[in-house]
Length: 151
Image (tube, rainbow, N blue to C red; front, side):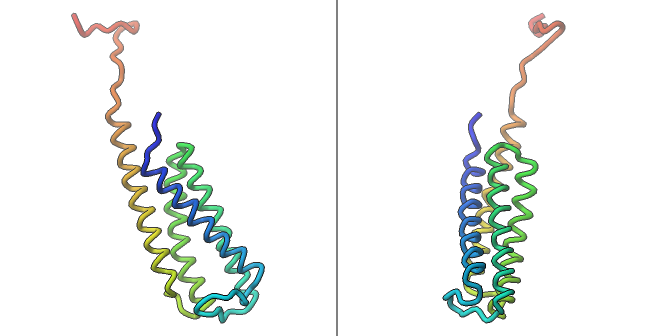
């Protein structure tokens, strides 16, 4: 069976977004509040590292939900994808506040744009899945497997 292109693209975007969040998390864990970003981090070293751990968790959840979707475990994959998108957006706002004392730093535009794009692709992909499963033609089977419709 052919894979749904919208779900494949959404999954690739989730993997890329997850990897980028994970790299940011590793950087925060290794360097703490000394990461050279603009605006500068004003949180303590401990808070920075805790935010880094949260980013790594989001990374793994994004990659795992994409894995589920790519392996046609759609029910779990769709549910987890929407949960992770929500965590990603809420986590970005919380991290913005904790790290910069401003929940809506410039990166939030990118986060919201990526989330909206992934969400749209998931909705279109799920809609296409419903159409293809509803339009499948089942073979006619009569008594003992014989097709009696000609009679």
